[in-house]
Image 1 (tube, rainbow, N blue to C red):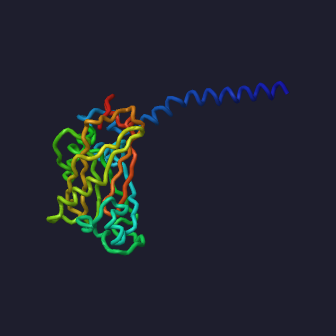
Image 2: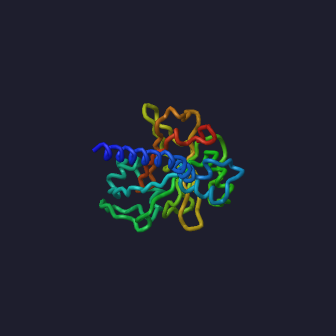
Image 3: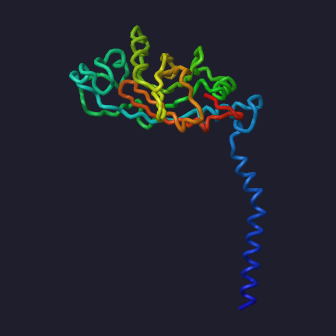
Length: 243
């Protein structure tokens, strides 16, 4: 019996030593999966590093929009769920208009998520430059800038200003215990693939900090309803919050 106990203790000891010996290798493996943009200075980024940041990072999210029901003429006259009393410029979307109150999924958004990118963050701008992203929005001023990519069906015509105004009225940044932050302006860009980019500019007068546990971006584009969380504590780069 004593021999068996001694062998068991020896076996346990060997397993513990083996685990301890493997710890450095495990730590090295974990470090190896860290994205290069996170560990390397911007000057050392490759195009692949930049594309990785633009595809999967705290500043870039994929959101599946909810398709809302169409409103009846009476609902539109009363303001309805979309926040406006008319269909106006937003009916230019291929998924809008009509008086059918049933929810009819749009062929253009089936199985697809829209990309929401925090454009004003320094790492995003650096990655766009490195990746030569010609589709990135060109904006001016000191603002929190978020862009929604891949919006279907927008038509650029004489109603563009009206459409931008309606999009501005139907978006905000939400933080717990604080007043919602409304955009100061909205800009529309047409992409080469026939989709559109909607760019939201929010004033920095109401500062976002790491004390804000999360920031929710909420927007509605005709019948497309979007809501996506961003987490400021994760949006630091080189020791500084980047928004």
